[in-house]
Image (cartoon, rainbow, N blue to C red; front, side, top):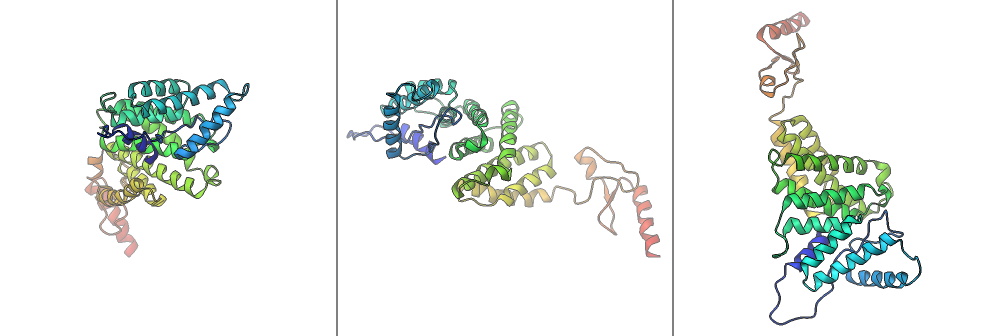
Amino acid sequence: MNACLSFVSMLKKTPAIEKKPEQAVSFRTLVPQDFAEEDTSCSASSSEINQNHSRFSSLSRKKDALPPVTSRVTSLLYEAESKATARDFAKSVELLEKATTLGSACAAAKLGLVYHGGLNSTVNPDYASAAAYYFLALKLIYMIPNNKWDMSLLLDVIAGLSEIYRKQMCRTEDIDIWNTGIKAMRHIESTLSDPSMTKFFTHRDNQKCKAARIHMNFCLAMTAEADGEFNDALNLYGTCKRIGECNFATADKLVKKAHTKIRILERQVPKVKPVCVSCDFEPKELSDIWKLLVCSKCQVVAACSRECLTAHLATHTKAEK
């Protein structure tokens, strides 16, 4: 989330005793790509932002150069940047909220980050509000044709959500928020795991895609583990492991954590199919699964009782004769 974090770190700086010239804020100016007419990097440098602003200014002087919504969203994002630079944070947040109501995924992502970490005395940290804005950003991104998704913006949103899931939310106490995010992540993961979606990605976008998928699969695995679905959790942690490291520090740490989780969970998951080999009884509760008796001879099947186990052992005796 480096691009977004640069914005928040600037906002939280205390005023210096000796006033220095204000630097341009690294503040995203991307409008949602379902509105945009050309591809623009959401992680643009200050010089690129200034160039884009000049281009926008010249275009806006032409009649009908930009669709009205695009023009308004772009204007709001630049105004929000200007207010943040002037340390008028309340007005900056208000402008971002207006841009969000017009469909700006980028503005929604910024608001998610603002509520995630708080903003001096203007906004207190509130993970529920942060999650809500991140969810809205995902919804707006998902409405865009997937071949136009901005992977930098998507990774920022997913990484922000991942941190909330791992460090702030509780599966039982925040179940409604939790389930909403999991549903959204499943949709995004389904798209990003499709080779036809990623085959034209640049190397860097592929790395961002891998990082986002690691974050999402780790959250899905946490959910399965919390719900006692250990086989599903193992598979999802295994997906993180298979995706592999991607040169994004937090995602790479999650890959290593997935390795550890797999070792721990493997000791909790029965290694034989939890069905009685003789009568086909299939226990539903984990406590009943652990009561199954594993055949000492073949060690690949289990029985629900001594009688069923004896019947199965008899088949081994016949085979040996």
